[in-house]
Amino acid sequence: MNRPMNPSGMGCNHGCNHGCGSSNSNGASLLRKIQEIDFSLYETVLYLDVYPDCREALAYYHTLHAQRRALVTQYEREVGPLTAFSNLSQASWDWIRSPWPWQM
Amino acid sequence: MWIYEKKLQFPVKIKTPNPKTASLIVSQLGGPDGELAASMRYLNQRYSMPYNEVVGILTDVGTEELAHLEMVAAILYQLTKNLDAEEIGKSTLAPYFVDHTTGIYPVAASGVPTDMKYIGVKGDVIADLNEDLAAEQKARVTYDNLIRLIDDPDVKEPLKYLREREIVHYQRFGDALRVTQDRLDSKNFYAYNPSFDKGCGGGVFKCQN
Image 1 (cartoon, rainbow over the protein chains, first blue to last red):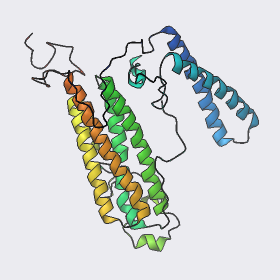
Image 2 (cartoon, chains in turn yellow, blue):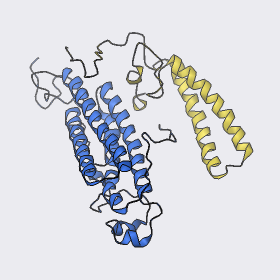
Image 3 (cartoon, each protein chain N blue to C red):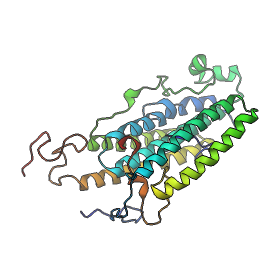
């Protein structure tokens, strides 16, 4: 397979050889936790949009937000990037290598 | 899932409103080669794509098109801000104004509301990528035409940026097509549809081995 280099000069033909993907069960349970936190966070965001002065909701938002940040950091370190702007590996474009959400 | 970022991809700061210009640019919101159709085309095509590179580029270009939709909407908003009814009535924006005031509604410049008939999802990687290559060129031509008709540099600069993005997307879709063809039978790319058929013998034409 002799794929020509693309115009930006990055010839990329190496495969992934360090177990990328989120097939490990820890990854699945981490993702599940993130989904649960995101559900609560989204509910809180919608509520705050229409009740922006509710201090109780704002405090709850911050609790969830801190939990989310910790979980996302762990997930992206152990499994792979959640967004195209958070590919942590210097050696591999993991963004397209872990399974797409409809393939899990 | 998606999370919104409160910023434009490229700044839009128009000092002089212009209803006629707005009536032309609205096509890139809801026209046949507009940003809404572009985003829906790519984001819906990606599910049946057999290769991760292609899913990746469709996801990321489809997402970028949503950012472009917002830029076009910002241009329309600023072009129609603080206009009075008399100015609008004398302009080509008058028919749009009757139905939508100065709200942002996705229609073509011809006045036809947006339609998913503008996009194609064939469930075949070669067919879909070729549709996408054509779509990017058609969008580029639409921006060419707008840039020809518009003088205001405040409007032209974001349009020139959007035009450049169409060209970059075309290049990357071309790369995706090449990556795809590298993985297919070089004697006959069309022997089977990797999105649907299950390997050799599953195609429209039975293969030799």
